[in-house]
Image (cartoon, rainbow, N blue to C red):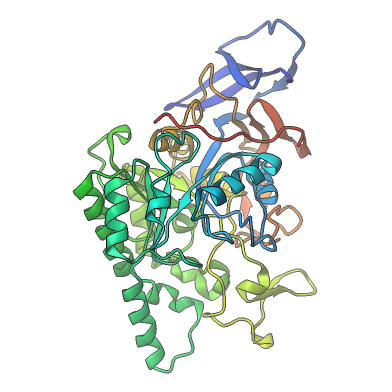
Length: 464
């Protein structure tokens, strides 16, 4: 394996930014020092002058669509997009086709990733109303499974878990971290019927009026109540409302928390004011809501009530979103073709290529520090899931690293989007920074636009 020496780079790690040299050897971080003059053998030197080195981003919530939905995405295509965006490890959700509801189906996904993923990977075990015994086979002996996923709202296939007995059994008996999507479907259905009863033609702007903050709060509260009853390790995904924030604390260090939370980049960036411009392109579950929620989420992220930044990367084709590209290549609603109605449009946004860049935009705006970015996108994910030897820039750790140039801009265009679906809600947006190099397990997979796909990512392992 190639040896790399990164010289004179600003290392962003564990609350500090320091000028350092860093040696990568045998897939690991061999040495970190203010000055490394000898590598003991031939090595490739990278000039880090004026650039920043981050631990690779770990995204704890993505939907890479394989198996069964590969017209939208594959583990290969989306892991490549992730690498281009500085995401070196991902944890993928079970709502593929078939749903990941058995141990055999779970292992099938690991086999696909072993053959095709450029990034490191783990997969959640899926839950339905009638597979509790199968779910509980995923236990602490499985050191390569990130957790158990429960859709307490907004599921596909047979994955909506609304049976109280099933929830009680899994929360009571699971040895694993349980990750939940929390939205109360009864509230959502009632809201939808009430708006329909007015005769109104539904649009994307109605999405947060249907999938309301009350629906999120009721479900999150329910999950937390069960978790506290059994001292379950609970992680609530994609918090989107100000109201839910009262359910979380910053009075306990992350490593000691039994209940943790995540916020996604689209809820930190978009608000309901933008449905008029973007329509169903930003339709997602839970919904993007009124601006006051965005401001509250930022405050809670920075004061540590919210623990992790992720993406919930969820690609759909333009046709499934009710859009097409016109002759000029612009994203255009396909209402004239009868395909653009709110209820037909699939929910989800492709984001994994641009999450780090988006946070660097907010760094440029003075909203977040580089150190906090590294903590929320890498360190905290490692701590929350008890990852083994990843998420930090430490000697002996896997060399999952990202080099960032804060002086080179990146504009999102159709030509540089790597998602298989071929579009982004951020098209036309210009970031003030760029990702120049991404290392995965010491392999320079992406360097200044050049790809080396000779090495595949590894299974993530967990210290449980």
